[in-house]
Image (tube, rainbow, N blue to C red):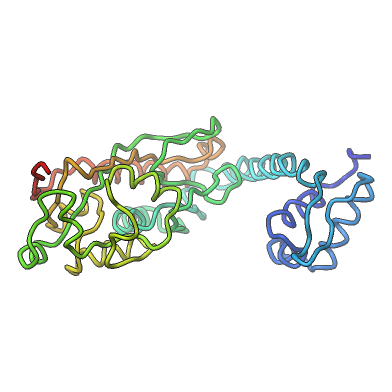
Amino acid sequence: MAETIGWELYRTLLAVLQEGSLSGAARALGITQPTAGRHIETLESALNVSLFTRSQLGLMPTDVALALQPHAEAIQSTAASLERAASGHADGERVQGTVRVSASEVVGVEWLPPIIAALREQYPRLVIELVLSNRVHDLLRREADIAVRMVRPRQTQLVARRIGNIELGLHARRDYLQKHGTPRNLAALAEHSIIGYDQPTAFVREASKSFPGWTRALFSIRADSDLAHLALIRAGAGIGICQVPLAKRDSLVRILPKACALSLETWVTMHEDLRASPRCRAVFDALADGLQTVLSSRAPSVSVRESSF
């Protein structure tokens, strides 16, 4: 019986599990809610199991549905792989078509625009979709074709090129320090306007280990956008965490470099199935080469070293 079940039924099951409702699954899949309901009923009948129960909170998955989820995700990954394999050969040797690129907010705004501009000059039939988020997009599910990541890729199906390390440190504008003084140790940060997060994420909690005392209570200005932090530092609003190459470019002053530093390993990565795609290969190489040029630059910077407590 299971051999006759179409993939669209498992796709709907997965969508309901991910969205939490038939209406949400229907919107995600571009089908009607009654169609989504029929798919679930057909699958339950074919498997002779109950997949969901109704409650005040909506549809609640049964243990059977949760057990099927990783298998449905595997089918989805295989289907996406088939699409990639086909699209990789669709354009012949011409660099044209759409490439979806995922990057963090700061990398996507501060480093990628000139690289993408040069790409479009060279390949005018190339379309770039730039997705800016600090979330790691799943390349196996084709949430993006290519990603610039600050963590080492672990999946064996991914092709990756290591770009180097981007260092983070505390920085401020020179006139802010001239007006308010330069902190000479970690304890002195409490006397300053400190720019930091509002709601901690897993990355923030991990990164805070490299910045002793970097807790929400310390911050005079709070925001959960890295771009907002950067804009506030540039405006002279206070002291915050910034990428060292960006700070060098903007002539920001680094503070307590020995006590507060974090190095992020940077990679450009894509699914191995896309290596045969001329458009993806062109974008991958351009991003890797362009970012390596950025990280290899040696712009002058000013550092203020800490004294002991």
